[in-house]
Length: 86
Image (cartoon, rainbow, N blue to C red; front, side):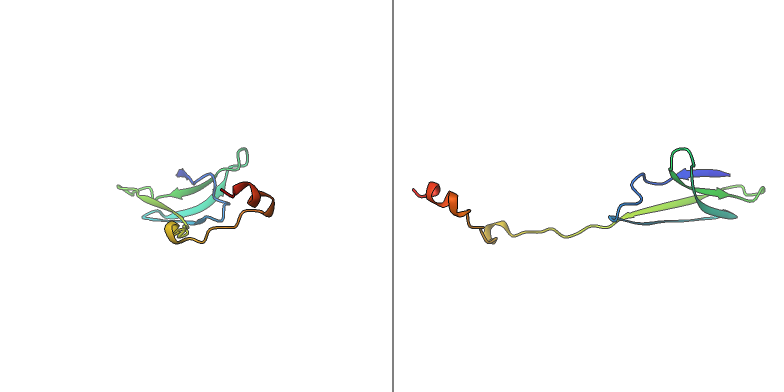
């Protein structure tokens, strides 16, 4: 049996659920009761010569591109407008 830790921020919305694959006989998501850390616990057959497991963590991203030279400029608050006149 082997346990592989998962990312610490698994509860954040920016992360998609982790997936795992390999030639293990059994795999399960477990939580350490003392620390709350999540792990994938994998078990292989006793005669498995090359035990393998792959855990994939994906992060969701957002396109935050902004065309700064053409972005609209916000108007200063009215109380600042008189101080900004040249």
